[in-house]
Image (cartoon, rainbow, N blue to C red; front, side, top):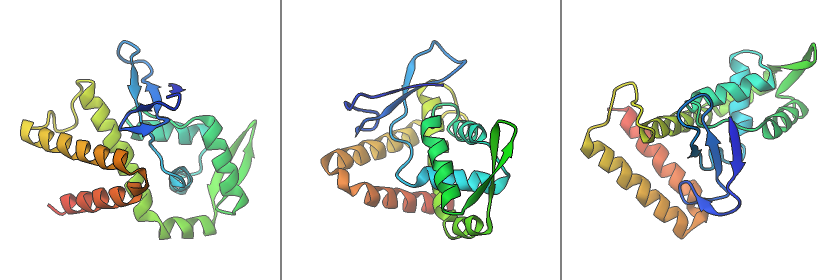
Length: 191
């Protein structure tokens, strides 16, 4: 997957410095907006969650995140490998040499930290999946259930526009917007 920085201009969902991702092996090579996918600390948490499922190499983590975002986003190795080094330094993972690669294995401390933060990790994975679904729909692809009914699609478009407007108006309210959307997602899961 190719990625280019947005050059500091506003793009994506109104966020500065967005990333552009080209979906490899598909379509006509158009660049797709990826926006800022992961908030500070999210990559550490989901890398730990993925390693908690089974020991992984850095490349495996990149590919798993790309898969969860339906091929529309993948973190760069320049972000993933320092994150893994950090997780190792704080004792959440250990790196075992495996040829020229390192295999990362979760420690008991890492498992405890992950258990305490499981809801947040799940929310980040949900956000990646939702992003992939949105990008598939924008590309004319359908989700598992097919096309959304027009009224539901309009409601989601309205929600997105309101969130973008509020974020552009005051970028410091990002955490509050995320909390509101997470509560709405939780309410929807109860239906």
